[in-house]
Image (cartoon, each protein chain N blue to C red):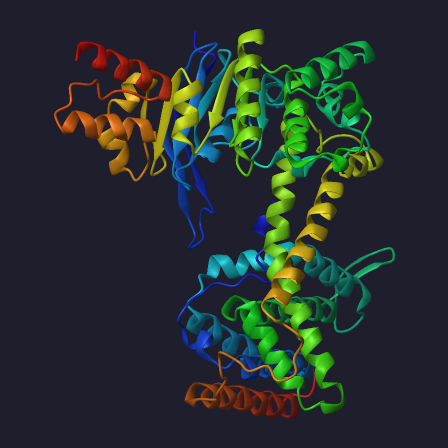
Length: 271
Length: 284
């Protein structure tokens, strides 16, 4: 069900990946994603996959969990792969039937794309698996803080994101609770057409909205009671400092980037 | 034949992740028709998970549940039927109110049963009278009611389905003493008038002692004890060892008995205590 979705979930741990400074981790994840798109051939992509394997291994998160994170977007992967197979007309023809044509180039590109998307998902979910939501927003806030002219809004946005992220599990829990309560009163959510099904959601969404508003008020009061008045002059409990681990991680990513560029230049064509 | 029966019932949360935990393990239970069972146990002892199995909201990882002699997971239809046979009212049920009027909200359950307008009307009014909501309340928006009234309206929503087994998960939490007594009173009355079986999850030993015929003690995902009120509270030492409480009055009398006063230590309600003391003073 809804709680099976692991994207955005955080798994507390003590691995090397957990220890990297969130700022560094965010930057490196972005770099990794950009480099994925720079890859022009299978050799370069192979380096990325290898790097990703090292990252997964050092995160100490079970492969099962990571694969489950890929599952929800399996459809998109298959869909793009199929599109690529049929829309690319390159290399030798393997199969032809009326307007359908499968070429070796198409198949290679399809596989290439699929691997690319999977790498993308795993890399970005590794970030959230190993970094708590508060750390991520804290890191983002710090990364964006050079934008002095909008300093206060940077804090506000970061705070809003922290709160929003923090309340996702709460809302999911609330949603399940209300769903169960209405099911216990015989609400039928799993049968009927589209219209009937969306109508059946009304008894769930009205209480959910009411609860969310109540929660928002309560949180606002609680924050005001503790004298929260925005970002100005606010100090932090956790100071972030770059350590040796961060530079090692940086070194790995830079080395990977160099390798990818070299391989791109040496093997110019995709196949 | 017991109305509710479970067979080696187990339920695991988050199987296959680092968070795997057993919420309940090997629960074997038989509840007879017409009992009022008080379910007690710590937070996280599996009480809520257990009751959510009884009306088919949770599918057991292993084991079986029989309601009225029928295996509830036999087919899709039996799962749906059991929702109406076993009415479950969650903790803080007022957060599930959604309709424009109290009347409409109470009629949500009976409507889902597919009853006729007349029958729905009859059931709604009956349920409203059980929980002490007046005619004028029925046309109000449920969000304009007071806290206690909201709670009662929500409970009426479950009672209106006239389930054979009514389960209430902490029906009195967060209410003032008066609201609590009202709710407990109406649960008792409902059971007497309809003859249905009632299960009440509660943290208050006093409430359980006052109204229950049987007590079910859950501890560490298992059924620790199940028996009559006398049987259970006479083992107050074990209950205290589990980190649970016994009624205050029981503590008073066990302590008195330990001090050498000639009283019966198995006293659970203030009324019983009064009689016991009167007896003692008469002797003296």
